[in-house]
Image (cartoon, rainbow, N blue to C red):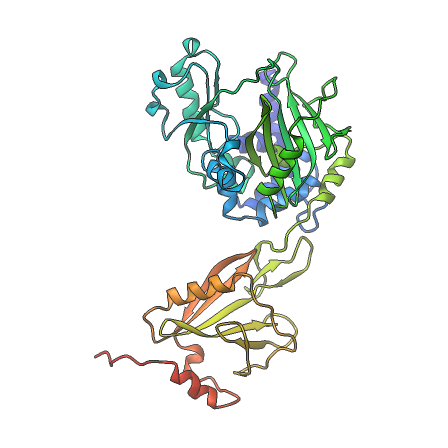
Length: 450
């Protein structure tokens, strides 16, 4: 068997790529190139990022183009506790026993007889479920935890939220249901903030192995499964707190295109498990295949997209998930002695249409100014991050007589463009000369610098 795998590794480029990428190779490969290559290797078809349709395709798109800073905290098994406490209350958290940066810092004598150790940044490597500390091989546990801490979980499948999680080891209370039943985790698949399907995992620690069953929002069994995870032979009772789980899930993942929200029901009480943005990194299919499209239809991709550069070296971004591209507007804030007095928005600069400049005051009221280019027929809308942009521009221009601060907004995030001290080198012409004087009056000249 080992010889066959070696031969397959040598001659099958897709198999070779899967093995090496799972070991963290190709770290320098751009994310989009990597995902297309791995998707092709596993799924045996091309990844459609221009017009994604299936659940798998859309989640690969989200890996690349839906990168909100808060996602990093949401997948961090340590920091997420703060997020949960703020959103729904700390009473839903499994008790935390301790947290460390290194396995050698753990005093096992101080730990209870039963506990769970795990890394906060990955999906199981290094985990220790201890039911009897007297039988624990502490050296082996430390060795496995070190392997877990060393794992670059982001590099394996480019799940961006994990990229910058500060790595730690956490210890949680070992939870037991008084009924003696196997603990079940209820995984609520939430689409645009709404839990539509629940996956129930059971038999995790039995000889027969993990089983997974799916139920809709009204707890009616759905005939769907994932390869390698068979359905169980029995119908699961609806959890007593299922309605509460749905309510909590809505609060936790509001405005997220897709998140799996995991809960436990133990001794009649709900406990939070984890938040997962990508099931099996979304490199596996559902059976029957129609569910790949049904789940895909439920994912509404947000506006936004990737930064690209066209043949004119112009930064653009993708509008939703299709072939249409539109200009990434730059917002030019004219700052005088550290205060924003004027904003210019350029539109149509890189299209066949005429370039138009529109001007606004600090409160985003239109200003009747023409300076080199005409105003547009339809005024641009106020950017969502306008107040944040004004604040950043004034911080950057503090102490300067005049500077133009250029910023971009993409996917509700602000990006810096450039600083310009001499707009048009000071030779720009105004349609109405009074504006030359008005802008001049805003500049407080410093003493001559000899």
